[in-house]
Image 1 (cartoon, rainbow, N blue to C red):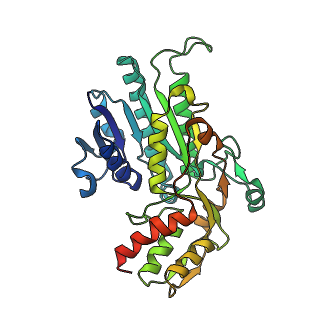
Image 2: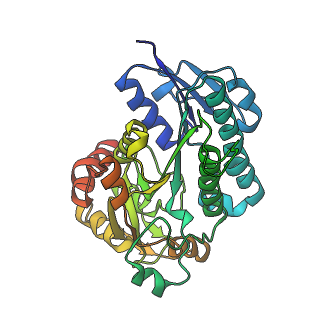
Length: 337
């Protein structure tokens, strides 16, 4: 059986590296990677071809490639996007639109639907105040979609672009969907935590940063309040979800964008886990107003019942299993603790 062609943009990031490794383990794929940076040693041998550089200027390299799947992971993340808003829009929106146009073109040219997997984010939500956030409970996909950040605005708009190119692009009549449309599928990830890569300064990285510091015997000043609560997920579950959604039959999907959840905890919960694992840990709370405001705009938790019903989503790691079996053993090994 011929190998299926896969493009992974943003392959050097935390999700990208883990996804390339998992696709390689599965076998049966020719993996093409793209990133602004050269590939790290962890995945260099797994990529059949790596296209390095600014994605916007490299899109033309892919028009002769017959991709079956596109995982578009390249993005400017929330904290950085707030500092460089125009650059974030160019990377997050224009890059995504160019790739969607390519996928739509390939779908029509080859008379087969290219599957386009897009990681969106809880940043697509925008809670107006803390009282609303605390009262909201489990938030559904269509609720509170009023992002407070450039990154969140970019993600929400790209969800809409994906819906357009997969449902309405080239339409002749409102009740007539053209054949060979691209197959856009998105998940809204919570804060993702990998045991194997270092935190990269993301807005939800206060938890893993705290534990890495504790494992090294370093003091840590957390940039959000102790009572700050959002949803998190282990990186293996994030990769599992992308591959499950990729495999799901189109007819089983009731929507284009799905919430995902695993466990919701506070910054103080992270501190208690750090103290339990490393009793000499010194963690204080010194909220950064800008970053605190971003996290406060995200829901405490989300309703992922549609993903569970439509394609059988279920995380492998609850909060105890995440800490005890995944995260803490690896950072103890990393720092000799």
